[in-house]
Image (cartoon, rainbow, N blue to C red; front, side):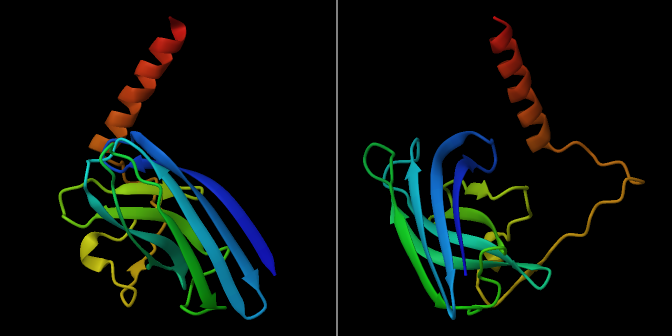
Length: 170
């Protein structure tokens, strides 16, 4: 038996800009897993529709477990709440220690993806692989021998960090 309550900052995946937070509660009982996911989102496109899911690790692979859909209100805000209830170990990989991230994708394909990570950033499956049946292999640790090209996302984050530091100096 175990219980986990997490508060996760939700961000747009492409820019890293904060757009809300999620409270995730998971409780593992003998033979059963229960949970709640509550989100408070802001600065979203009005009237947009999203699909939410938890990303868990099972057998060295990442799998998504759909939570449901939600709509954004006229003020660009949404406060969806989802409930989980499943027999322990069913579906495979859904559990306290296996939970790695929260993801919300726009149903229209135009809205930006919203993500929140439990601890470390992971490779979340793309929209083409969002079915529960398909799993994405967990990436192996990168070798230090090969230099890594700086990604656009990293440079945006570094730029944001520099602006924050400059603002703190003022």
